[in-house]
Length: 153
Length: 153
DNA sequence: TTGAATTAGTTTCAGATGAAACTATTATAG
DNA sequence: CTATAATAGTTTCATCTGAAACTAATTCAA
Image (tube, rainbow over all chains, first blue to last red; front, side, top):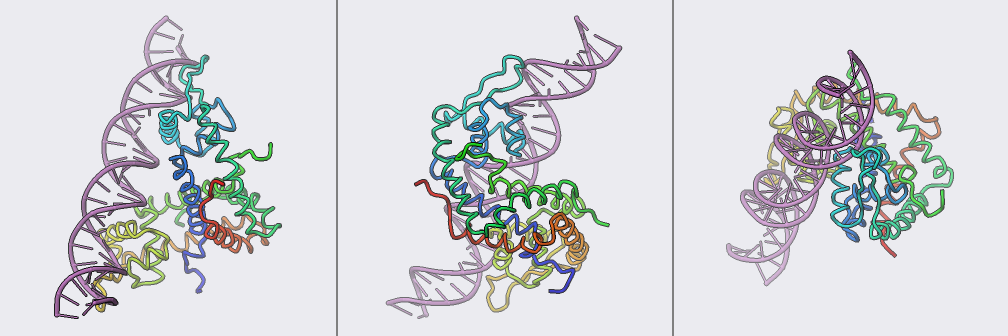
């Protein structure tokens, strides 16, 4: 391969994108098949299961979703009886979001399945790689943030 | 953290998705700002720049895009004068796709910028991690393929 | 106070997406 | 040979998406 040429299949951003889409759509297939959940609905359920009482903005922050996506996912979860919204007493703009009993049932059913799936993925790596993987992702993420978009010189 | 609980920010599929979106949208911002290219249009240009004469199905295979997305991206590239389509003489269903001179100009301008960006990302990792990264992504990808979607027990 | 600015969240609008149906061409079975 | 199936690619349709505009509530400045 001549230097300065770009092979998509060796290009880190492309590799990450393919891998991430592969894993996400695998998982999304399972959400969707068993419970009719979209990936955004599941992400909202995942943070509400762990941190009940968050506002929509706090959910957005913890899920890296934008506020429009959160608003729509929450609306569907409420429609389908899986989440509940109250208005914060001290600031009536804020919502206070929680899973319903039905939502929690699904959360409790799905969580161990996803953790097991993750463990099975990690089993594919050697122990030393496995230990370093998260730090590596953190470093790449930090670098991406620091670099900002590529600029034409 | 109690075992069996799922923290989104430590969950591999979520981490990969956030990192990948961060990097992809950084890059897409640059394409789009300088040349009005979508990520799919750029991917098609990237493979045609390296492998001129591919058919749409071959482009789809090399970019992990579906055939509808390829069809639309190609249509736009042709509209904007950046790619050209001919019909394969021996099989008139097949298209033979190439960049135009203008398309190649953009390709030649963008390629080194993206390679430099990738190199800067990799600079964030230690040398040993950097060397192993691609193999690690390959292993995860292979594991994801092998595992298929998670199943409720 | 009160009215301008800010914040939380929703709706709108225009474009992107993918599954399925469709067109055109080529391959294959009888 | 036909006609049935398979393949390449496009179009349609219903849904998804994000930016910007919007509503409602709160804060801040004068």
